[in-house]
Amino acid sequence: MTLSLNVARMSAVKPSATLGMAAKAKALSKQGVDVVNLSAGEPDFATPHCIVDAARRVLDKRSSHAYTAPRGTDDLLEAIGIKLTREQHTTYEVNELIATVGTKGALMLAIDALCGPGDEVILFAPYWVTYADLVRLSGATPVVIHTTRENGYQPTMEDFEKALTPRTKLVILNSPNNPTGAGWPEALLRSIMARLEGTDTWVISDEIYEKLTYGDFKHVSPVSFGDDAKGRTIYVGGVAKAYAMTGWRVGIAAGPKLAIDAMLTLQSQRTTCATAIAQVAAAYALRETSDVVGAVDEMRSAYKRRRKLVLERARAIPGVHMNPPDGAFYAFLDLKERLAGKMVDGVPATDLWLANALLEQGRVATVMGSAFEGDGCLRVSFAASENDINRGFDRITAFLNERLPV
Image (cartoon, rainbow, N blue to C red; front, top):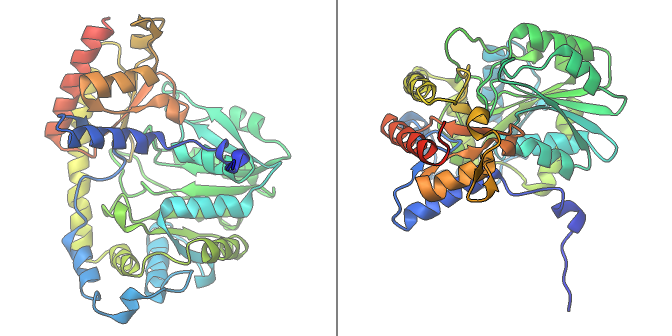
C-alpha cells in the first residue's frame, strides 16, 4: 500500500522558523542544557490577574463550556467595537466584526477568503514568516518588496509602484513590524492607501503590536484615513501581545461585510469559534478598565527598559548594526559586515548557520533573518528578563569574537 499527502499543498508551506527555534531551545533546556532563549515571539509575563479573574468568575457557567456563535460572543463583539472606536478612530457594525482563533487565524481566514490562483499579494520584507506561506497556501503568489535598514525598513513609493500589477489582489501591511520593530509613519501609509484608491486591491493591516510603541513613534491605522481606505482594509489584531495572552488564542478582525462574511463562513466550517472562556477574558482585556491599563503600562515600561539595554549591548559589538525599534519587542541585528565572505568549518557563514551555531554551541536562541527574507540578520526578542538579555548578549559577543573575529 502506498499512501501519499497533498503534495502540491505541503510543498507550498514550510514549518515556522520562529516556532522551530523556540522548540529547539526548549528541548535543550529540558535536557538540562542552560540555554538563553531570545527567540520567543511572546511576552514572558503572565496574563494580568484582573483578566484571569474575569475568566475565573464565569468558569462554572454553562456558557463557558459551550460553543459560541462563530462570529464571537455578544460581549466580545461589543468590546471589539469599543476598542476600535477608541484606538482605530472609526466605527463598525457588528456584521463587520469577527473573533478568531488567534490573530494568525484571522490572517488565514482573510487571505483564503480574498485570494486564489492567479492573484498576487504584495509583502514588504523583512516580513513575519507566516505571511508568505499563508499566501502560497491560498494558491496566490507573494510579490516581495525588499526594504533596508538604511531606509528604516520602509519601502519607497517607486518600489511599490513597480510591484503593482493588474493581478495585485492584496497588500499586507504590518506596523509596528515583526521582525524589525520598524513603525511606518502616517505619511507613508497615507501614500500607499492613496495609490490604491479606486482600485480593486484589498489591504490587510496587521496591527497586533499597535500598543507596544516607543519614543516618538505614534501608531496610526489606515482604517482611519477615510471611506475608501476603510472600505478596502481588513484590520487584524488581537489580545496576544499587549495583554500577554498568547495562549488564550483570540484574534480579532474588522472590515467590509463582504470580506467578514466570507471569513465567517470559513471559520464556521474550519474551527467553529474561538474558545468560550478565552472570549470572556479577551472582552475584559479589550474594554481596558483601569486595572488592565495599569498592567499594560507596567509591561510596556519593562519593554522600554529592555529595549534600551538591547540597544546598548548590540551597539557595543563591532560590525553589528541595528535600528532602534519603534514598536513590538524585537531587535533586528544586522551582521552582514561580520558575515561577509567568511567560511567557518568549510561552510559559508550565513545567518542560518549563525543562528544554529549560536544555539548548538553558544547556547543562546535567536531566529535567522533569512526566515523573514532579511538575510544576514538575526532577530532577538527582548520579551525576556534583563538578566537573560545580558547573559544572551554575553554569549553572542563571545561567540562572534571566537568564530567570526573582526
